[in-house]
Image (cartoon, rainbow, N blue to C red; front, top):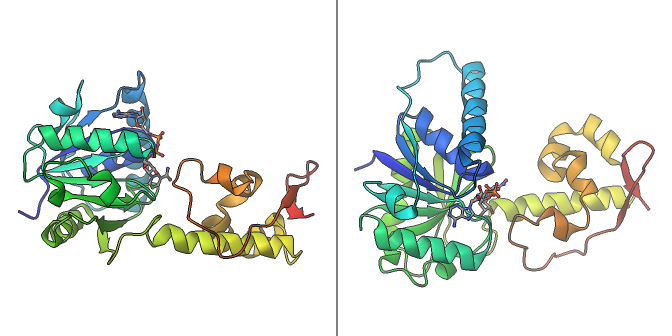
Length: 268
Ligand SMILES: NC(=O)c1ccc[n+]([C@@H]2O[C@H](COP(=O)([O-])OP(=O)(O)OC[C@H]3O[C@@H](n4cnc5c(N)ncnc54)[C@H](O)[C@@H]3O)[C@@H](O)[C@H]2O)c1
């Protein structure tokens, strides 16, 4: 079966809410579990943003929107789901625990994707009864607009699972890219990290600062530096606080200064 008929989203923050929007706007019903007291409001805002963005992007008719249901437990969320997406905070113990609960309650053929930005799937599937159907589906923010998901299998993931996941993402407008081997932070974030680090060195070496880099190389700044805010968020550890740390920078990171007068980041 190449179509997702019902999705479950476990975790409804920035990424889980946007996965839900992606599914719903593709006509798929979603059951959402997130214990946050304001989860419904937060997911509702993400969905409203997604609908606004789609209305500006296309005049093509969209399928009838799927139905969103908030439920009280993981067990309830995964009932009847054929794609379950875990998007809880980036902590291996928490994720492993959640994924093991999903595994115990989900139909045995349901696919289980994790949104992790860097934890290896072998770590996450350790305690599962059916680990062959678990993999990383690493998306990019916002998930309802950016069509890429890196698909990474662990030691126990079957090859058929990754092929099935790729086929099931296509009808919701996503390109699943199967990564040959699991590594921390996978491929996309490693490449972005390298460009970002080089950007910091260009500033450190006084070739440019964030202000003129932004004017002259808007794409470079948006993708590599993530706009001024990320550069100001130095040190490196803080910028990646929501993500797994990368193992070891090839080149050490430079120290930069933020000019309080104009908020620009320059070499010290
Ligand atoms: N933010 C990004 O740009 C980005 C991009 C790609 C991947 N990711 C990954 O996606 C995952 C989620 O990140 P985020 O930015 O959405 O974080 P977030 O903090 O915005 O959302 C996490 C959500 O999980 C909920 N949660 C906590 N414990 C839970 C539990 N036991 N069961 C169900 N829900 C629970 C929280 O209430 C919160 O709403 C992380 O693994 C992150 O690395 C993030």
